[in-house]
Image (cartoon, rainbow, N blue to C red; front, side):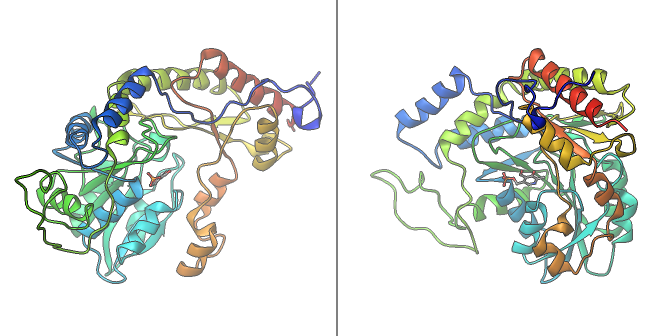
Length: 397
Ligand SMILES: Cc1ncc(COP(=O)(O)O)c(C=O)c1O
């Protein structure tokens, strides 16, 4: 007997909606934000360098520059490459649009490469896209699973290309036991509300290159040669120079204080997300209608997302129908991502058609992100497992 789906009027597995992500905000974050508000210094204050020092140490990078978003971080990193008009950056077919949009904003042109079964860019596909105008390769560690960095580093070094990491999902991830932030030309992190460190909005550029860090610091603050705190006070002067084309990409101090507080729990919250993921692995690993994405032994998954791949041949419904059925069960599934070339802007700009990136397209038909955040209980995870089981049994071929 198969239970009636909530979509068809049956009782949902959960009474209340479980989102795919929710920030963990404790009394510590409230106290940290309150202290900033009480200090009266809301931006370019002392919380920024304090957060930057802690973040650099956490991700293994010599420099961390806090900015207003990961999109801003990517824009500054691309500007540092730099990209001449129309010079090319290779980006994965499965990513959020910001990976490519920020390259265009910096004067470059994204060139899409197909992905592998782990949803990350395939180094062989990257190599196939190299041309005389290629200047950089940007990898995305999708969901927090590190991509094949060793292979990509070799490919980029051989052609003197900048290797950028879009680490929006990957704080806490490790490759061969080391965090990712010091590798490549630069790494760009997100502090958006759904991410592991959820400051609301925010981002960080990390790099081992002194010049890249210095330029990012300058350009995030309108390319002004002095900061507001240096111009503050009775003995200070008002003068500054504008030394380049800069932006307001500053992170506010409230956001930095919240982020610093959460950074202190990165290991603890990461272990919790890892335990929830292990619970999902155990539940789904033996099923013939679902495929899980394994984490190779030399990698530590950052666990922003938990993504399953449906085996559609075993099912009578497509992913969208299963998505709707799970949402009706009050399970906040999501899809990461719609392939870049399916979006009208990139399709038209880059002249792509369906069929151009067959692996990303086939994977897109099968992927579902399940709820994952540190405040989830075991019982929440069991509800997700029960809902997936209920829906997939309903649609079994
Ligand atoms: C892979 C990827 N890159 C970049 C971004 C942009 O991050 P932000 O919202 O901090 O600008 C996101 C946001 O979700 C993302 O998922």
